[in-house]
Amino acid sequence: MQPEHLIATTRVASAPALARNRVLRNTYLLLAISMVPTVAGAWLGLQLKFSLFTGHPAMGFILFLAIAFGFFYGIEKTKNSGMGVALLLAFTFFMGLMLSRMLGVVLGLANGASLIALAFGGTAAIFGAMSMVATTTKRDLSKMGKFLFIGVILLMVAMFANIFLQIPAMMVALSVLAIAIFSAFMLYDVNRIVTGGETNYVSATLALYLDLYNVFVNLLALLGITGGSND
Image 1 (cartoon, one colour):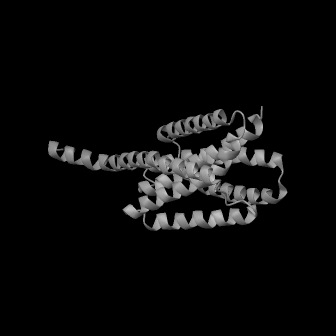
Image 2 (cartoon, rainbow, N blue to C red):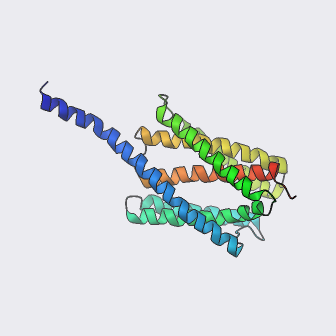
Image 3 (cartoon, one colour):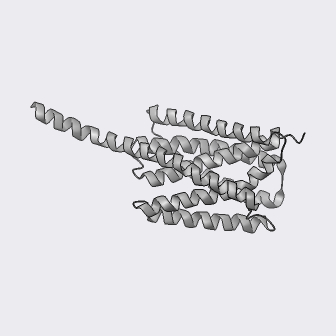
């Protein structure tokens, strides 16, 4: 093989790897940026005492899902343009608003600030571990998505049911299950990027944001229930 042919072949072979690295890099960058509107939304929600669940929690849950899925549809339709990024950041602001109610409750505890810091650190540690495994494993994780999606649907149904049942033990169990499911989703979603299964960084960022958000929220809920102090 001539040297110029060897160089050309090497470039062609490395092109997909470079594209995957670019998607991963852009995803992590946009994910970091998305934390800014999330914090802003949470801060504003705390100031306004915002909550969709005041009065009728079940209707608030349905309204939340309607708004969230509206964002999902819009982001997916515009993911190849700047509008997709704008909608994603608007969605993260909305999710910050939704987070403010739980933050307000936890901050009302004597050790609330430390619980939030612990939940943040735990989420970061889980993400770091899942990302490391996802980028180094040789196993085919593509089949995980179907089972995890079914798990999320069942989890949402159970959470909706517990709005009426109000069983504390069930709330704890669902939080533990949610942490497990969305931690596995982190593994799956990062692996999809590094293996070329996801080529759009906006879609990838949305998926990872939801993973991180749900792990953080449920870890914070679990810490608040089991380790909260009023003294």
